[in-house]
Length: 297
Image (tube, rainbow, N blue to C red):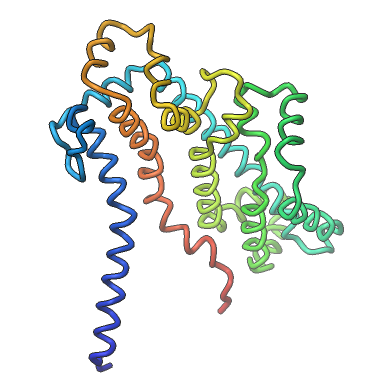
């Protein structure tokens, strides 16, 4: 196929446009990283752009020894492990029966519409807060996990994919004497791995990045997840230094080498590290998990 001059010009413009969009996304991140590794005097005088000035790791040493940061990090790790596990369990257990035909589950349409309605309408913030409060889970880890235990959109994605699976898979399992539990665990879940990995990525990013529920459901700063803690640091930078008033002598020495801007930048960067580590491994499932089953051959 011959490439015309118009085609070459279009490819050049498209490439330049994509490079520009990429730079818009990457450059602020590089500036944040440079500030976190720069001397506080260089940051204060505005001499830091995309490369560190007066390279130092004092900010990272300071925050990794800070009890407040480590507590928030531990809360987020617990939330992600528990939350993603609950999400995937409920997604699979809900999607499987809703993917079966009416001959096997007569109430399928009723429950499908029941879940769809929850996407379109919800009680709002105040009723949600009252439910969390009067069920006794406020200021606990369960307040961060249970209100969103079943992501309906992700459940619908898995359900629609299960509906596209050949009926022969189920019939072969039934002929071999497998019940619904065995069919789900040994046949359906292995086949649905790309889709389940995709919704697992959604759940992981959602739990890790969510900060608002920690702000309204947690009464103690010690129970804040990492993103809520970072949001507090960004809005009120001085709060980070006031929470370290009972610091050790080593931290007091490090405090002289850092300020609120360098420590905030370092914390924000560390907050994105888990996403950067997990996303590349699940990216290969992302597209295939969403579109698999849409084309049958």
